[in-house]
Length: 256
Image 1 (cartoon, rainbow, N blue to C red):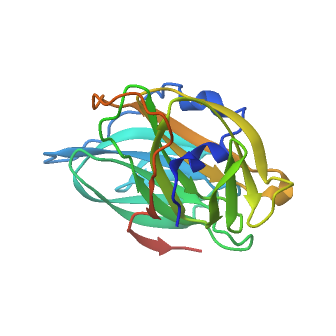
Image 2 (cartoon, one colour; image 1 turned 135 degrees about the horizontal axis):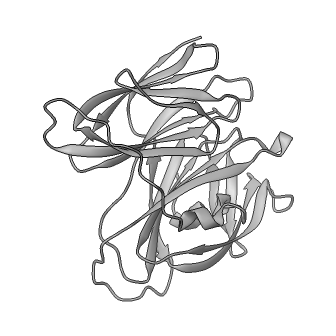
């Protein structure tokens, strides 16, 4: 289990840090006949091995989607929707049935499992949009890389141990500067990623996905951020304890 939300900064490369505060241009909303209450969906391509076509409920939303791409947000009716990822040969490599709650924002992520030889998988992650204090930032980080369980060291201190592929952590942290590293579980030298200086903007929520594999130098992150409302609390003096869990439940049909 993950016990502290600063794990999020452990996977932010300096080259990707600017993405945390960059505004994303929303893609065209998906129309839904008879739509009442709606939610939104981002689609994250975190599989370095393929370029994919993405369809939602049978409608193509983008072709030739390379790794590192975030699509959306797409506005859809609440309820079940089918997201399909198809490779260049026309083979559907993964199809996921995703349940969207009214007013929610959900990330659908195509990524590799921990095993180098494993087939791509899909997980969903719900954006935590609760109001936040004026000098805090919220982060949800998901381990979607081809990496065995790892430890995270933040500002020189190990704060997470034995983090596995597919798990995520969420917490509120003081906005501002952090330095972090990702290391093989139990080791104190030769980080898999880092040290990484990262600045987190106040009153934002950032969704972070680690992807790639350290054996070929492809470790990187995908991140997108949005604003949150203030909850009126005072400036924090330390990092809060976070929450942790597995990816959201969904039905996935493999192909190929």
